[in-house]
Image (cartoon, rainbow, N blue to C red; front, top):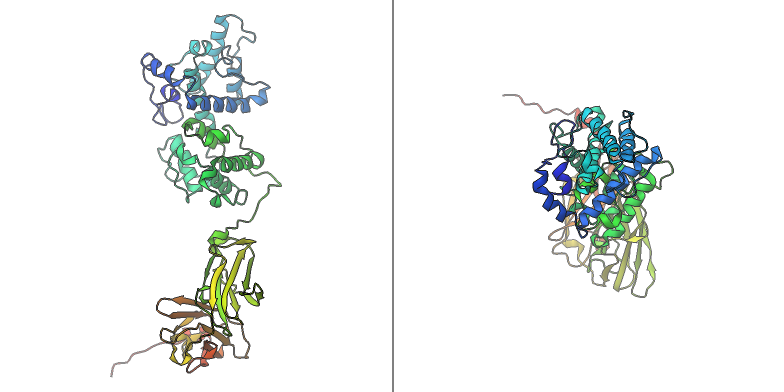
Length: 494
C-alpha cells in the first residue's frame, strides 16, 4: 500500500471508492518514512505528477507550486486550488499569514470546506499540512484528484447520457479502467502500471480518442518504449490538450505509480481534438495478404500466364504496386486490376518469358509487404491440361443467377507442372467485366469464385499450362435472380 493509499478516502458515492483503507496513522508512520526515502522512485514520480496537476489548475488563479511538500503550509495556495476546482469562493481567511496559528486557521478553512462538500479525509488535520508531512499532503492531493478529475466529470456526455456498461456500483478506478478497455479492446489492459510501460497502450488510446492522430501504434516495437511514449504523449499534448502530468521517461519506468497514471489518463475521456490536427489515414502494410500461384516458389512456366491476389482489407487505405524482376534484372510486364470487392483485393497477372529465378515485389503505400520480394522459379516444363478436371455449379448450363456468387473447382493434382487461368466472357463477348477470384487449396485444387451481373450465356474459359482444359469453354446460362424467386416447388399426392 502506498502512502497515498493509507490516507486518502475520497467521497462521491462511497467513503472508500477504490479499496483504499486508512490504517492507524501512528502504526503506519514507520513504513511511510521508508516509503518516502530519497530512493523511493514511485514517490518522486507521484510528487512530480501531483505538482503538475495542481499547477495546471492554479494557472487560472495566477499561482504555482514549486515544492509540494512546503508550499501548501500557509494554506493560501491550497485554498486557491480548491476554489478553482470547485468553482466556489471559500470563507474569509488570512491573506498574509505569518504566525503558525494563522496558517493553521487557513488550512482549517480549506479542510472544513472539503468536509462540507462531502469530500472526506481520513487521519489528516491542518497541522499535518502546516508541518509539511509529505505523505499526508500527497494523500490530500490524491483525494482532490480522485474527486474533481476522475469521479465527477469523467462521464459527462459519454454513452449518450446513460450509465456506461459495467458501471453500476463501480469505483472511480474501475470506471476509468472500463472506459479505457472499451476504447482499446485490442490491447489487454488490466492495471495502471506495467501494462503501459512500453508506450503502445498510450498510442492506441490517443488513436482511439482521435482516429488517425496516432495510426501507426500497432507497428511500434516494445523495445522502443521511450520513443513510443514520447510520440504518443506529444501528440496528445499538442492536439488533444492532454497535459504531460507524467513524463515519458516516468511512464516507461518499472516504478510507475498507479495514482500518477490514473491522474494522467483521467484527461482522456473528455479530450477534444483541435482544428488542424495531422490526421492520417491508417495504413498497415504488415496486414496485407498475398496469395496465389504467381508467388509460389515453383508455380509458373515460361509462356504461361499466372496470377496472384493482393488483399488489403485489414491494411487500411493505400496504394498497391507490383513488379516482377526476371533473372537478368529486367522488369516483366504486370497487369494489376482492382476487383472492387468487399475484401479490397487486386489481381496481378504476368506471363514470364524466360526461365530461371524471378523476384515478385509487392508494396503497399511504398512499403514492402510481408515476405516481399517473393522468389519464384520459372522453368520450361509444362503440364498436361488433358489431366485437369473441372467441377462445380459455376460451369453448369443452368442454375447460375445474376448478382449471386457461384464457384467451381479445378483439380490439377495429376496434371504436372502448371497453373490454371480462368477467363470469363460476358454475353457480349467482353473480357474482364466479371472479376474472378482464384484461390489455391490443398492437393492441387484451385477454387474459382465469380459473380455474374448480367443475364445471358457466358463463356467460362479454363486454361492449364497455357492450354484449354477438356470441355473448355463452358457455356453457362445466367438467369435473372428475381426470376428465381418466382419459382415454387409443389407436391401433389397421387
